[in-house]
Length: 303
Image 1 (cartoon, one colour):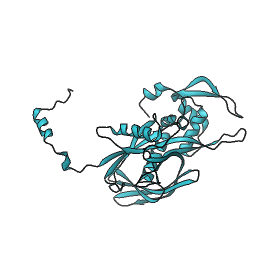
Image 2: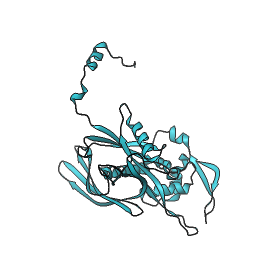
Image 3: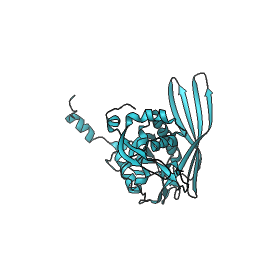
Image 4: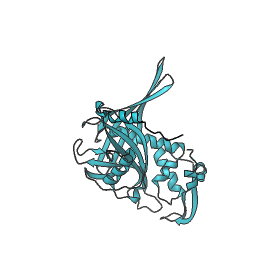
């Protein structure tokens, strides 16, 4: 197919087109950056430090929501792709300059931001936390990792003659040292005429800025779903060389359940390549280190 070429008539039309006749929102990118964090250091021989899922948060230094916690993010510049906005803001606010970054949802509720009509593109990001020492940027006092837990508190199903609805309430809990954040978010899935629609509502909010409790929950659910499907996304939480134990541990942290080791290793076998390197730890036998099988990751598009 040939490249489209504008006619003189079309160029004339565009020259006189007045885009200001339509109201235009501002556009932002918000990044939910996840990592596997170590909860303190174990002093016990043969016992590994506990690891948990963490998410990167910014304590806002300006209004609105001053002193509340928000995801890293910011406004798109003119003629900038929203993906470039996400990478730029992530580096400016946290110093993270290399991360898995993937859009997962658009947030466009009119009243979501008290400053005006602002639409946000949510990005799911994964990093190896040991590679970064986050720092605060221009409009933030503090950038820090929080431990995150999500619990399903309640689920109700309503079936009517022409539609069905499933309401699920999730309790979002986050903590770091003495700081604790909490929110209750309801997910409503409606099935009508063989089609599904999903809406979210923040019922309780303690410490989060804007609608970021909803964004975090949806990012977490997307991460868990992707992990259950194939597990490829989990590799971005690990260093370049890793043990199969650490790979399985990361899966279990996200999924919230123990996995059968033989089954897990059979599933991961096509995705990893054994190296000649070994790692040792206190009280443990040496373990082999593996790396990604890049051919399986980048030549095979199936999940």
